[in-house]
Length: 171
Image 1: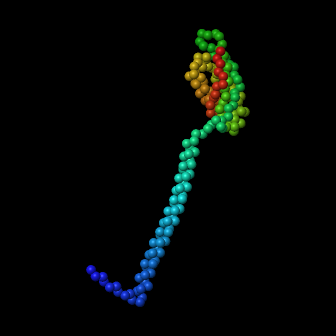
Image 2: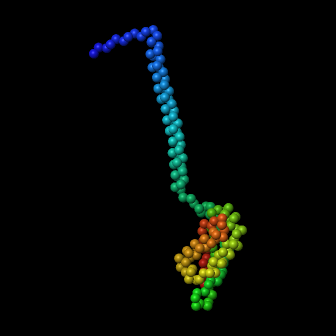
Image 3: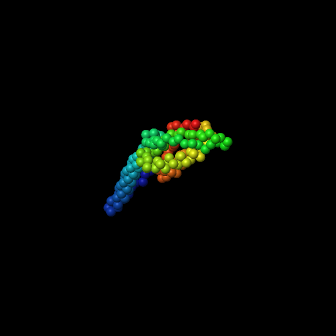
């Protein structure tokens, strides 16, 4: 096949034919530059987010050590008589030393003025118990849970994390 010869443009047509082509090239180049700039900016933003997300995951995986911030507050030693068993005349006594585990020193400042209320709550509850209620590890576990519940009620809005036994002697 033979090529057809090109027509020579007329005087006014030459400039108009090339101008749309050069405008198209400029638009394509500008769009490519805009796309590259947007893509680069997006890449940096996503990389920064991914790094922040990785740091947050790493911090969440590390266990929080409560031993560093926990405060232990001793309760005055208590010696109290227990309710006698049915058919038994001999009085039974319990000697109890406990500590309260608090979240931090700020909570300790809230709890210290309320210690007489705590001691009263513990005394009243413990005098209702029998020696068989405190028998074995299950009895001490139930005692710990009940003391924690009653102490938290007495100290509300402050909160005790745990009740810890130092000495428990039943005679």
